[in-house]
Length: 231
Image (cartoon, rainbow, N blue to C red; front, side, top):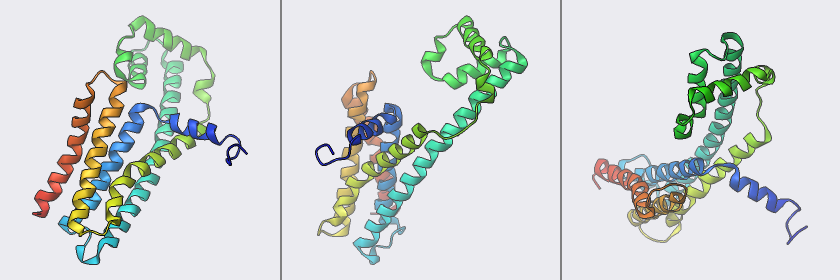
């Protein structure tokens, strides 16, 4: 035991925290907050009947957060299976059509994706194709879920839950429900601003601009619920 915690606990937490890259964790957090804004604000448009009391909104928000966390983790597993299948298909295409087939370089660009892939010349893409052709393992590699895949799914689910908890807390306060909804919306928008501000460190965008841009998503959600709820 280390500090009352089992051996390897710190290593597990570090691995969990670094499983998702910055782009993935940004999206997970944003989706979680936007979903919870929609659910908690939906009492304005009758999705959650205000007559049922605060507990109904609170329980609904918590259940939606948990369900979305599970669904989000499932998406991570599905995405991994898709990537593995696509790479295996590419390897078989190289084996059947040859590394000089235009479809091969097109597929390599699609799999690599992003601006960095655009920097590769045709000669470099053919070199990648040659390496794929030289590997017999890719075409027959068994598609399966690894420990890293399950860790990614767990990290995704936890990120979703952590993002959705702060906007739920106002519903525990002894104040009128309209104020709880408004405070929940405010917490979510502030959290979105922080997410944009924090994650901008991985980009060239100004922090304040990134924060405002991400917060604008939450404000747009709140505005829609107010407009359609005639609140």
